[in-house]
Amino acid sequence: MNTTKNIKRTKKVDVPEPTLKRMPTYTMHLKALLQQGVVNISAPAISEELHFDPTQIVKDFAFTGVKGKPKVGYSVVELIHSIEKYLGVDKKNEAFLIGAGKLGQAILSYHALQGFGINIIAAFDVDKSKVDTQYGNIQILHFDKLGELAKRLGVGIGILTVPGSAAQEAAEAMVKSGITAIWNLTPAKLRLSSNIIVQDTAMYSDVAVLLHKLNS
Amino acid sequence: MNTTKNIKRTKKVDVPEPTLKRMPTYTMHLKALLQQGVVNISAPAISEELHFDPTQIVKDFAFTGVKGKPKVGYSVVELIHSIEKYLGVDKKNEAFLIGAGKLGQAILSYHALQGFGINIIAAFDVDKSKVDTQYGNIQILHFDKLGELAKRLGVGIGILTVPGSAAQEAAEAMVKSGITAIWNLTPAKLRLSSNIIVQDTAMYSDVAVLLHKLNS
Image 1 (tube, rainbow over the protein chains, first blue to last red):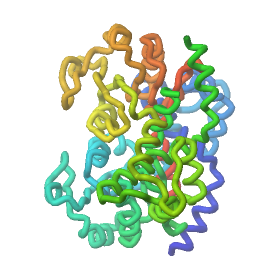
Image 2 (cartoon, chains in turn yellow, red):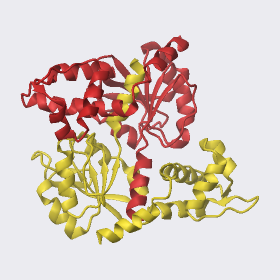
Image 3 (cartoon, each protein chain N blue to C red):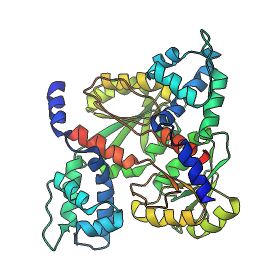
Image 4 (spheres, rainbow over the protein chains, first blue to last red):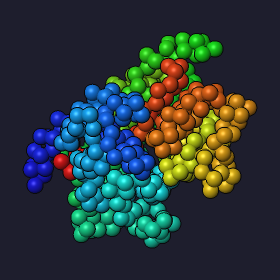
């Protein structure tokens, strides 16, 4: 099964990552337009707002299969729908959060994730003072329960917010539990089987770059 | 003055960004070692824990000016001190946060920033229901007050957590107020004068990449 998944993914990796990374910017902008009552929009009009090259915008949209009409542009509703389907926002993306410390709590309170269809259904920690408490409406459970619950519920996404020193071990436990996609918000560089999807968001690293440039 | 700053920065930009991005990982790991009572550490020992190439580790440390001793390795205390000084963590890095919505609140509650010497001293928003309230011990002020306060307090760092559609306008106001470094957590691509330091952390974008790979 892992092999099938691997082959599938390899086929699609042709999509340039910069294109993927622009997609959320498009959907957020388009949703704002929709609220303003805008029905159709052209690539140059989007370009003026978002400062992306209009040719690039047309190329990005083409990846999702949507087509504009000459002189009319794109239907805003159709565009949003097409991009979200392309990203997989319409799928059921249930996630566990591992590490309910400050960063974990920040992510738990970061409701925008639901806009991407990511639904955090439980959080895990090893700290006894946190276990069996609630954060917002999310239950914090002991890390020991991760394996059983992930398998039973078929949860595929893990959001990793433990301290960097605990990241590798926690990630390995997640993989053993059947989690195949990890959003890694720790500063650690994970070493996992190549069929596991790891996406790093190194907030710490970005802050370090900013500070160094500022203080140089 | 901007010119001086520019020249200074251009001189130092030779430091590879990947090196800078690894620095927080080092300090966090080293601080954990220090707590465990470790006095000296070698690059291979760090490599085993963090999975960075040991030669790369030695090169990274050399940028900060610290030197290891044959057979002894590096003094853990000296290493931490050297890296933090290199990053500018020892400087007074006062920051304003612009946009006290969900993401802004998440950042406000993300205490790890203080480990980098970033001290958020006030937050700004345009939402009347938020203005003149407190979040934790941070006062939320009206965005109109940003210019006056930034100038009076000489705050140089702005953390941008407004909606993407408001990002460009807010960033321009920040620059007018004398802010020279912007940590941009919005999905917008900012267009600012080249002497302004902009560091993007596109959490949305990373989530989009993760979801697309998972659902492909």
